[in-house]
Length: 141
Image (cartoon, rainbow, N blue to C red):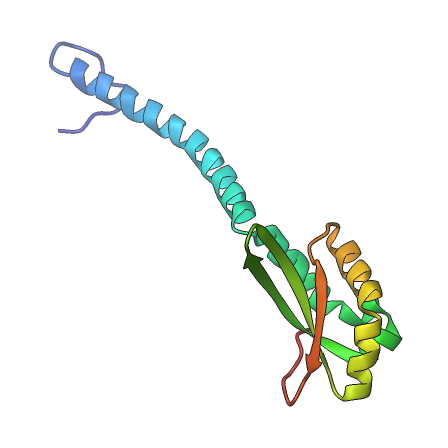
């Protein structure tokens, strides 16, 4: 037996009408759940670093523009690493250089590179710059 909204409510179908009302109420409540689920996903991504990851991808892709032509020609970003120790936690920006002269120049420009990278991320994301030889590794971006 089926029920439709136009049926009258007598003693035999009253329970079904109440059941339909509760189903409609639950469906109306689901719309709120969907909104709160979307909000929940946004908060979860934020907590997992989704926004940070997006900013980092932007840094890697726009490396040449952010660092400037001269610095970008010397080295490529290799990524970052989070270091933890006794009561300390910091992130290092890893850069790869083609040769030892470029490595030295990038090392000397570390404070400038750090400032530009953090400015691009709108935060003090990195605490230091680590430079190493590429040795055949491909940079990011």
